[in-house]
Image (cartoon, rainbow over all chains, first blue to last red; front, side, top):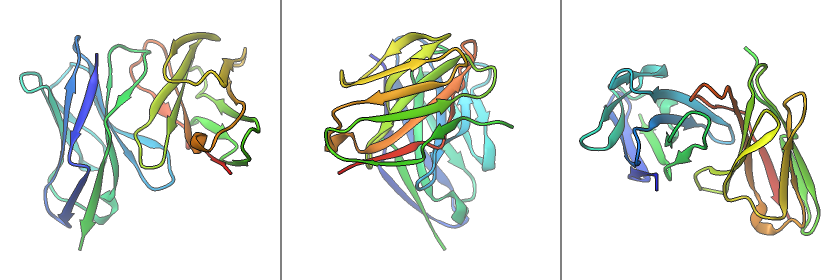
Length: 113
Length: 112
């Protein structure tokens, strides 16, 4: 069965520091992988997606993620954190187009000045 | 660009009452998904529709039902509401040939 594991329910960084949010997946077939961001009391916004075209994926707001098949990982990074990056981040997996997203438990990112 | 529309945005119901949530997908999107996000939880898939037919079913209680209409909008009907049904309910839409789901702002249901 497919699953998504996000390591670390809370991550705290200082403004300007590197952001690293970890995501590992389990799937019997090559999956599509996504990172979503959720601000308080708002919906889910797609940050970036992996669809097998390129292993390094660039998204919005300066975020990027690298797909590593050997490690079954899809970690999210941003070189320099901004206060506005504070939010909940979800890694998600889709086994094939048109099927349900399976989400990780989420990681709360806090950014301090 | 048009986004997914959900109504109402907030809903307060009492135990054992019924609720109907509506979702209007992005134009030309043929697939609708419903997810439930409890407090501090990750979104859980409930049910999806493609071309007005149920395409997949997740952890949707028997007390809930849903359908997609000819104009592609979808409704989630919830009966005999329980306190545990209090959650954010998201609708997402996509084109079947796309792997990208676009989420609406959600409906926050509070059951008292």
